[in-house]
Image 1 (tube, one colour):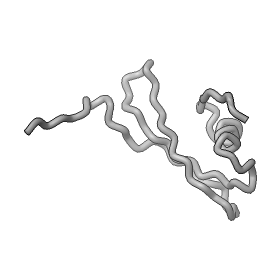
Image 2 (image 1 turned 180 degrees about the horizontal axis):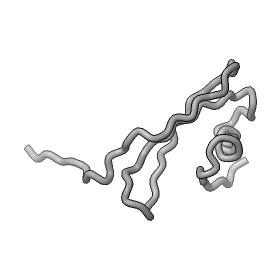
Image 3 (image 1 turned 45 degrees about the vertical axis):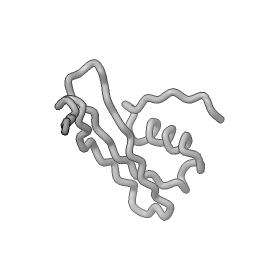
Image 4 (image 1 turned 30 degrees about the vertical axis):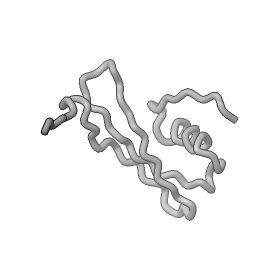
Length: 81
């Protein structure tokens, strides 16, 4: 039987964790896949905890909140509304 494995540089690693500010009642966790072709680091998943009461109900609203208030290095394309 053939065995397949991913290359070492394609294994997903644990990234940074950004906890929600205390006092949030409607906190949701977003795990975002991060990878840059410009460096030799493995892809990673960063974890963000966002209080949905402090932003809109859509995923796009949470992504905008993450970019504006938590992690300005996050980039994404958007074309929906």
